[in-house]
Length: 418
Image 1 (cartoon, helix red, strand yellow):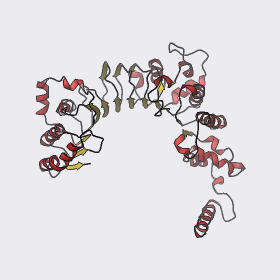
Image 2 (cartoon, rainbow, N blue to C red; image 1 turned 45 degrees about the vertical axis):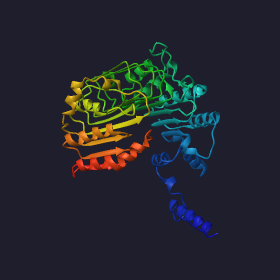
Image 3 (tube, helix red, strand yellow; image 1 turned 90 degrees about the horizontal axis):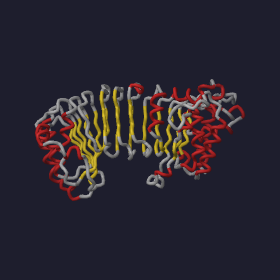
């Protein structure tokens, strides 16, 4: 009873703050722009629920510019595909705002919902959307790419050859010109559609492609000068990647080694995250994250060949998994003369080195070499928390190798083992 009284008292105090001494609704007196801005900070479901507050509030939520259809925001309210599709389509049918800043669909959908998703994309683009995110993957469809939703050319107003259709809506093309962020996961988008996005979305700054099994050849050039961030992750059928004359700041690639990867004239590139690939000299690169799989006893000294190629590198992160699969053929084929030269090289700018998945004495040799040759080093992080096939080796690190490394590290270097 006491707890109930306290809750009722808190509700009364809250209502008192929202109303004037005369009982008038203070929030409703605010300008519409501010009220809409407040509602935009709620989840979409919470914003819709404000329609029952009073008659003036009934349609306020329909003007919010951020439409985030994330099923995780409605936990406790089970949705099937039909219910989810009905929810999204119902909200879009009632939307009255002049434009849409953000449009996100995060739910387990496949090509069975294609007709709905097609209409949603058309709605977003015709409302001058700035951010589009379609995250349609789940554990059940992850291994069945033939079930993935296909973003067809006609949805984008294109013919099968990739050229614009004569009867396409002009509002659609206005939407392309407003788009700044495009993130697609478990969505099949072919080369021509991606090329059309890059050529016509002149304000596009971020492009993220995950689990795209239709992508074969990705080419970025002068038409993508505003693009700053590019992610290509687990797009297993990519054959070639060509990046020339761009202003990219960050590039992430995780997947199979392409038959060809060209990176040329990207002077602003300062961060890269790569899996199983080696790149040429990049003078402005400051942060590099490499994700590799390896045999348990593979040596890591070969990575010094890459460090040597990046004179301004300040942070180097190596994320390892020891699961017996083959890794990094390029380094295995590196000439011994180059390996010896890299081993004698002292990096002029490297300050932070982090390795996760540490599992054997070969890793110890790499750290020992870095400690002895990198004079500006400020911090070393060894993360042993990742799943590992040889826990005994981790115990040996804790008891023996850790102490050896600590004796080599200068007092000015922060040494962390997780």
